[in-house]
Picture 1 (cartoon, rainbow, N blue to C red):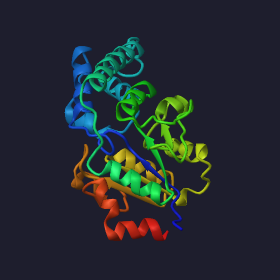
Picture 2 (cartoon, rainbow, N blue to C red; picture 1 turned 180 degrees about the vertical axis):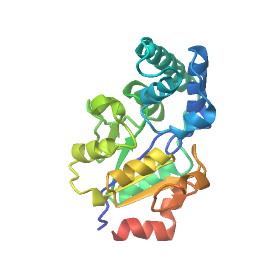
Picture 3 (cartoon, rainbow, N blue to C red; picture 1 turned 90 degrees about the vertical axis):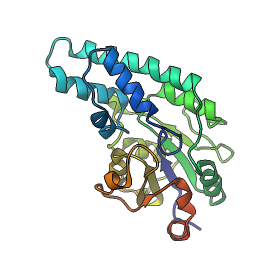
Picture 4 (tube, one colour; picture 1 turned 90 degrees about the horizontal axis):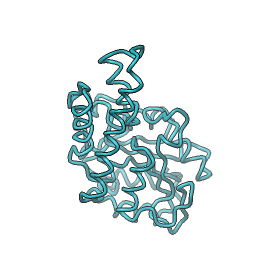
Length: 246
């Protein structure tokens, strides 16, 4: 029996297709609220709690002590939520290549699936519902063996909205699913903050996927246990054996 009990996946760019839509929503919200935001800088913060991204950008522009700082953060974040939610309500939402196949394979191995994200709860629920991944989730967003996923965790459920690269979302997924040992957990994502979160949570393995927001060269600068071209490579023999034989 596999030692691995849980695989924690990111959403946009890892399990949900993202052709820079999230970044574009950031840039549109910034442009309409007077915030100076460059695409490269926004992309470097992908995976963070979205509100913290706006806090960081406004701190750089006017300073946290500015009397209008909090108001400007809220204005930009509110506009971003409006744009982002409209996008996911009206545009095509699809799983990434191989995602559903990997989900099915993990369930055959009795390995639980959790999704973590930089999205807040409301937009996460829109995405889960559009994909049908909210099936059998309870009010705490925890599922059972018949669910497509067994847990959904967002920064909304974490104190002070502390998402990645902090380990807390992974740890909360473990707690909710009754998993005590982080060395039975694998973390997979497409951003540096995903990799850092897996390392910070002391996961058995932390893998990056390079078909999302960051290239292989960009992710290679961060500590990881392997970089995959897509989730399908989890079933490549050498990676598969890492999962099954541990």
